[in-house]
Image 1 (tube, helix red, strand yellow):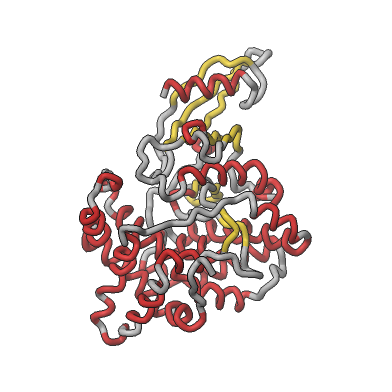
Image 2 (tube, rainbow, N blue to C red):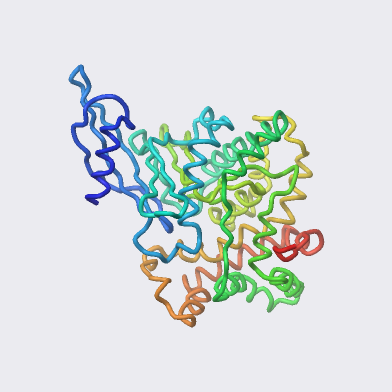
Length: 401
């Protein structure tokens, strides 16, 4: 903690938090923070003494590299470069600041891998304005509608600038580095297969054998890469890790009223299905999906068209594109959802596990709850016709081609 305090103190004296003389830097409670898998957070308050004698109290969240290296293979190095680029270069150009859905970044530094211990992102702590992460993993209709409307607006900014200045959007997209995931221990394959197993016992779902074969041909890593590839005219700058952990909600009269998006380290130029599918499968119950799935997709579309009436494709074309790629959200859900269902059991060190322990973990973590949740997602993907669309209309190929 001392090095962090020292660094914030220096930045405060250099004026990054505004005018005034630094009085103190105070450690704050971390109550209400979401789960963090690829960064370490500190909650601080910077007190600046003004000429008038008034003290400006500025609450901030400081994000640095985690002490553990377990998650380095995902995007720890890349995430700081992407997040700094999003706050500093991309979102201001897109007009995201005007939407009122992102916190202010006071300071950000990425060394692009040269010295990850120096990487840092400092943003305003929105808890002081009443924002907090929802304690519910599965969100209600009002939370989902608010999040999806604003996600549609966020993606809509890309479509708007694409129509007026496509070269500008292309330039912005190049600031973002895409981290290519690998699966040397076949953990991802085991996680994905978990949701298929029970359904394959039912002859009505026998075609899922062909679905899984296509997922693994040429490889799951290649399939994930291809599902997330930018395809025009649908491609946009996406959040990349859009789920409840990265959403802060505020309330009026006990009703959700506004939302902020945080943690843009996984952002890149990709398909909107990546954000939508992950969010809806990670943060909706089976009952919510059955009752309101189509309505929720319409809410997203309302957000898009509130920014640009004609994004370059119709709602029907959007749905068709989404259908063949909807399974992309199951990839992260198959790993993270079982964890989130048993939060008291997430104190593990994945990096220290043996190969067999990793595979055993992937197949059993979260117990029956985890298996039921992943199976429910695959069943929904099938019943909506998304897996058939994936089989018939999605083109898979090795990344080298």
